[in-house]
Every structure is written in C-alpha cells, then in structure tokens.
Image (cartoon, rainbow, N blue to C red; front, side):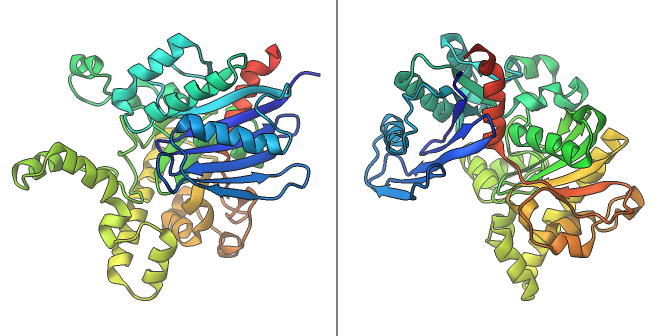
Length: 403
C-alpha cells in the first residue's frame, strides 16, 4: 500500500510548528510546537492524536533548528509515527514568499532552494527560517519529497492592474516591487470551503475572504482565483492589524524622517510592531479591546472603530471589483471568534445584500456556518481556516501519484 501520511512543517525564526496528517481521511495523527529555539528556556509541546497517547511537554535549551527537528522526530517516534516511517509520503513546508516564479506547490531541489534564497530581500523575516526548516528536513529524510507551499502563490492570479503599483515600471521591475499578497494558503482553503458550504463548485462562486488575526488580510476571489488582495509587497499593506498599521500615506515615512528625525529602521519598527491596534490603544487582543469598549474606554472604542472602518472599506472595494458577490467569509482568530467585529463590519451594507442574523452571529460554534438570515441576498459565513490541512492537501496532490 502506498504511503498516505504528510508531515507539515512551519519553521519560524525561533519556532517550529508541525502536524502529521493521514491523507486518506485528513485525520491528524499528531500536532506540536517547538518554541524559543536558541534560548535556554526552549519548550516542546507535543500532542498525539492517535492510539490514545498523552500530551507531552519538555523544556530545556534547543540550540537550533537541527536540534528542534531532531526533538520532533523523537517525539513522533515515541508514538510509532517516526519520520523514518515508510508510511510518510512527503514533508510539506510553509514558505512565505515565492515571488512571481512559484505559482503552485513545488518539489524542492537545489535550484528551488536557491530561488527561495534569492527572494530573502523581499521576505527577510520569513524566508530564511523557512529555508532552514527545509534544509534540516532534507537532511533527516533525503529520500523523501520535500514540498514548498507558498503563501504568495494563490495571489499570483491577480491581474497586472491589481498587482502593479503606479510607480516607474523600470524601477519596479528592477527591484521586484509589486503586490504579492500573503495568507494565500488560508485564502485558498477558505474560499473553497465557502463554496462547499454553499453547495457549489469554487469556479461558480465569488467570495470576499476576510482573514482576521493578529495579521489581517482580505481577498477578492472570482471563480476560485484571486483577483485582488489587501497585502502588498510585504504584509504591512492593507487592513489595520494587531501591531501593523496597514495602509498609510507613503509620505508619512518621509515626514517622520525629516521632521521626526527617525531612521528607516525606527520607522520600520513603528509601522510593523508599534502600530495597528496596539499603537492606537495599547492592546492587540480584540477580546481585551472589546472588554474595554464595553467598560466605556474611549481609546479602545476609537481603535475598534478605526479597525472596522478600514475593514468595511475593503469589503466595499472588493464588492466593486467582483461585481457579483455570493458570500463573505470571516476566518482566523478574530474573524472566527469576534461577533462584534463581524456585526460592525457589515452594519449599513444591507443595500448590498449584506447583513448578519444577531442570533446566528453570537451563537457559539466551531464548524463552518452561515450567520446571515435566510433571506439575505449574499451569504455571510464563518469558516475556520486550516492552513496545515491545505498545505498537506497540496503536498499530497503533488507527490501522491508518484509514491
């Protein structure tokens, strides 16, 4: 029998998230996280979901990603799920930036590694860690297909009218300045899951996907293909986020340099880590912000209103881009769990066929579900994202026929 398991790795600068899935039924066999890699206080949390195993946690220094993945392999082996298992078909890796070249999942070889490395200047915080994870995994199982699944690939279908900035073309091309978009794995999964919820095929559905977490992005998906998205050259553009500003006048940067005396690095830090919700009110947790709003905190109220105003603008813009909208789908931590955000984002858009049912919106639930009234012209849905399953699916579809 052919191997049916896929190990999904998401390697960050100081962490490795992992899941092992069986693609026969998409069941999870194990999940875990290694965090604070390179520190004395490193920690590995492992949860076996197969054969009744118990959760395990271990603490102590994990020097680097080699040691982290070796520790992951040890934990999986304890459950009879070792990386050396013949039942493992492939290892799928999240890679943040694929540029214009990588438009679909790709089996990694030396040339692919070199191209991902070439893209480091446009993803300096993410691609190096992603590369490290791939290299270490190749060392552990050199015989096994390693597949890169790119956050940007879903957005490569954007037309040039949406992907290009209105700056000098030669300068833009020389420095690869264009809108790439991110969270693509989530947008791909949620747009297809929304079509299934509607009982239709993805190619028959137009969806606005709102991925609202600490990082947040919107996409306009026509017939299963992305035609616009809110993030751009980097994940900084677009919606108000937990610590990122989203859209600002580019001249703000020059003003802060000339008048504020700030360096490029200081402004980068400001816009990426000290802006958004945390810059507006000191909190980036929407639950705490809502608690403060309900207690009458005006600073939290303003932050919430700015967040919702930007979100509503993008919903309206993408409605115009698509022309016809069959559904709006909320996903990720805030999108899945904050009924006030969903309600406020669509308030006043009834003339566009968008509204939520108060009871459905506030009812608890973990499954994909509609929160719009039965008579609504456009469906509004909450669709939990599953990026790991999407990576595993794309990986297995690519290599499954060859194993």
